Image (cartoon, rainbow, N blue to C red; front, side, top):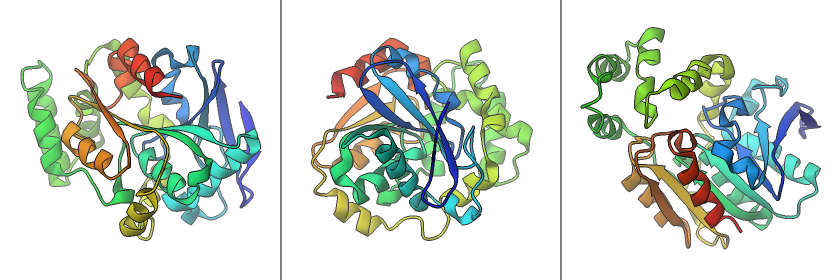
Length: 279
C-alpha cells in the first residue's frame, strides 16, 4: 500500500498491482474499497494498476467533513493522486458508480486525461440514470437460470422499497454473468468492503450538473471506451450507447455473457478489449 494526503488533509491510500504503464483505477460501489477490482482479470500483467481507495474506504482515512464524500468533491482527490504520481496525463479506468467521478474529473481536468475507460459505468453526471424498468429488462434475460425464481421475488421487494439485508444478498446473481463459486466469493465481500454512509452521500444534492458536464465533455479530445455487459442492467447496452453518444469519438464494446463485473465473467475477453483500446 502507498499513500498521499488529499488537499483537505484526508489520508488516501492506493495500491499498485502489476507492472507496465500506469492505469489509474477508480472503484464503484458507490464507495467500495478497491480490493474488489483485484487484478482486473489479469490486466495487471499488461499495465500497472493504480487502485485508489476512495476516502473513507479500504485503507484510506475518514474525512473530517462527511460532506466530502459527495462525488464532485472527490475530484480533487483524483487530481491529487495524479500530481503525487508525477504524471502529466493519465489513463483512467472507472467501474460502475465511479463512472460519475471519472466523468467529472475529465470535465474539470481534460488536459490531464490521456484516455478514459468506463466499465459498466454510471453516468448520472450526464443526466443518464438506470431505472427499475432497465433492471427488469435485464433480469428477464436470466429467467431460465435455476436461481431466478427466488432471486426475482427478492428483487420485487427491492423495487417495492421493503427489502431486508437477506433480499439484497439474494439478488446478487443478477449482477454476474455466471453465478459460480468465483462470483459468490466476490459478492460475499461487498458489505465488508463498502462504506454505507459514504455511499449514501456520494450522489447527494448538488453532486451533479448534467448541463454543465455535457458542455464540458462535448469537446473532450481523448479516446473513450465504454464497456458494457450484455446481461447488465446498469447500464443496459443500449443505455451505454446513449452515454457514448455524448462523448466525442467514444467507442462502445458489449461483452457477450457479461454482467456488472465483466473481468470475472470472461477475463480474456475483458483484458483483450481493454488492451486493444489503451494507447
